[in-house]
Image (cartoon, rainbow, N blue to C red):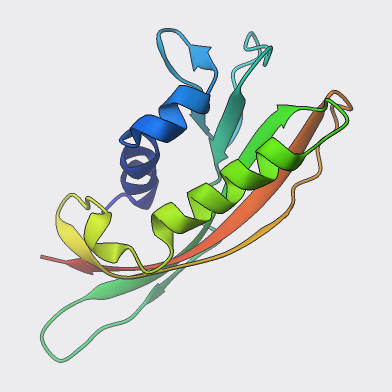
Length: 142
């Protein structure tokens, strides 16, 4: 079960969010861990799906599940106002919080989906501003 693939599918399957995002190689600017070196965020937003920070077993008598903690980081150009970024970060939070039935999980299903944030997501690039949404997913194997 790949939690990153489940998160990616949820983010890129939302038409409103896609309309707000930058493009990279003909696709929405959603990356694992880091953006490619050649990517330059000119307009819209970019999303980084961080690697899971923990993966803990959560077995029952007859099934195996995993509790996975993983962050989604959202970045936009620093324009002097973060209002639009904040609105989009809260929108992303809403895509996941208590929305386990909306997650596609290869080889299993999501039985819980909690989201918190958004919080500041610092960056070393002063031209960008970021927000972090923290996810706690429980994924059950088939």
